[in-house]
Image (cartoon, rainbow, N blue to C red):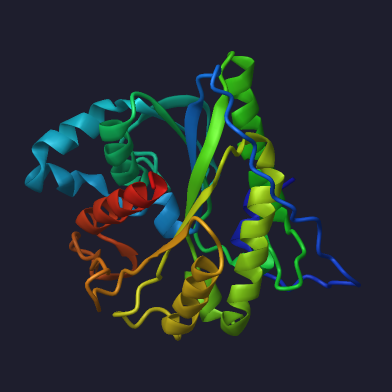
Length: 296
């Protein structure tokens, strides 16, 4: 599959014939008290999941954190398929695992939380910037699309890799940071249906590694800028999905109430404001918040 060529083209609308919905049954398994499980977490989405936040600025306000993630956090091991960059081995979480070697994503904040509360955790990141839920992951009619299938295969392979090493991976949850591209296109009002299918399929297709429960953590797209079109519609859909599913949580990022965090866009360079991506402080906060929900 020529994935990169696919993703660099303008998303197309797939022709859907008949009923395309696949099985979505979801039955978490019971934990075996005689087994030691390894906790695994997913990160999926588009560019703010991939990571377009510059880590070079972290040294100026948190030198200890900067040094830690320049060397790598060996309590949280990560494997990734991000914007065409693939790391098939589990390696320490560190700066430079974003969309390129200069950037980072929510894995840094998530790893901070996980490493404080667990001896060893694993993260699988599968994301691509600029991608659209309804034309590249799952359509509003329930059809699985090429990017979804590609990433599910990658995730399953990485979970199987742990099993081949004699481990017992337990998939505890995922962080989903996506929706910006869908706000541009005429899919906003259909986002709820497509995201519900997406969540159903994730739980069904990865059910072999889910025990007791699976936490789904979503996050608002940015509402205070001029980049996204009617972001409130996308965010309302996200709220609805999380309200209608057990162990599902939505991070409010507009700072409008007590439960919300306040994020800022990337203005740390001299190249002008970046209206689409978060600055380094905001990305760390977003990751830490996601990590807290993943641990619920």
